[in-house]
Length: 337
Image 1 (cartoon, rainbow, N blue to C red):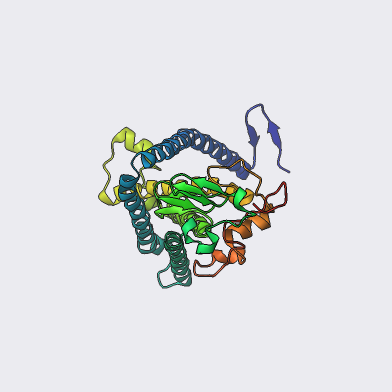
Image 2 (cartoon, rainbow, N blue to C red):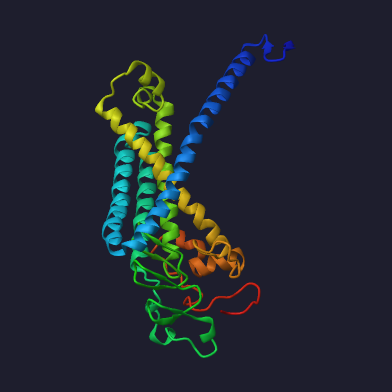
């Protein structure tokens, strides 16, 4: 029977496996601690950057709406398209063939999954842009409140008309939006009652695609020693101390790896705002207004339509919304506003 001697710091064991386990545990703790230290500045930097970006974009959009739309919209849409092509090409033509046999079943499954993600990413992006949530998209007879509803509507100074509850004006779209959430630069349109479903799944598939792309990078680093040597992120101490020159391929791989990390952070932050919105039936600018909360099922149906989770499969699935965005059930009074 193996004998153990307990000391204040170390465990000494005659069994070789136990000694090896202790060494591995120490290394794991050291690596975990270093990763925490390395991630703290990164997390703070990303949080501060997002705050400045959101504040700056809002200020510029209000001050120069036409210039903002003409420059930021094409740049943001181009970023999504270029990023999609870049990560798809890098994964499927360079990384995945090094992990799986190109003629094997797993490689074919990976292609199907990648195309499914790209289809939903771009499909929801296009559907979001093409689906209008403007008050003017309502039928003519619904753009005018009935006498019993007129006191619930409010007047828009820019549009010079009465608009339904939860509808607000957008300076970029130059109209009032039904249950306006925010203006999205990646779809070049306002997110509101009619197109929120497409925006949410667009963001979700952006995150899924980015995470899978990052996972394939990490998988290749784990199983391939030669590839690990090409990543300065893994050997940054050696690079700094000895100024080891990097090949062009190594530079490209490192740049793509860093871009992939940021491609995961962006939709993650976006979903961090949108999941509470969906769960509580609020908006981006009114996160504390819980008067329209009808429970998880009711809120989900109000945002996604009658088919609910089935809309995850494809943007082409028809999912009628429970109402046209002019009447909203309140929580406290259980009445329609």
